[in-house]
Image (cartoon, rainbow, N blue to C red; front, top):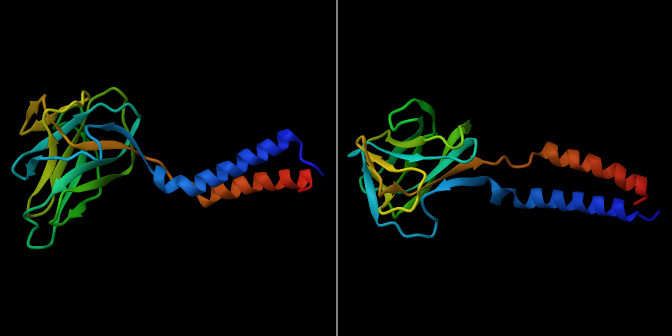
Length: 202
């Protein structure tokens, strides 16, 4: 039996959808919302931890935050053990209520690194309201976090020791984690496709 054009088009779209979600999920797992910089720019200024209490304010346009990225460089690596730090997500002020914290990340001595810090889930936020990322050192040693001054990011500012610097920002990128398509989704797509092919005699 010959497939009608409408059925054939529907099958083609479904097959293309299956191929796209199975082949491109790894490249689409992070969706960036706010960013003060790009991944290819060179950072020359840094804010040291633990010498300063720093925080970066930002104004999300999405309704959740799942990750944040910073640029770091480690000089004092805690006698070779690396330095451990996490990031608090605060609401309303640099020392406001903590909504969530990322899993701790260990960073070793070496060149400038771009690190991704993941929250336990995509944390709900209100688009258009002010939030803060607070990097917190959890171990001995020290780390420097990439800073831009002047910065063109208009959604927030760098806070250092309780003072706002309206000309500067930490280099950061934040957004949500997009779940990879599960095996169940692909199975469901297959279950939809099989009856169409059988009915069409293919």
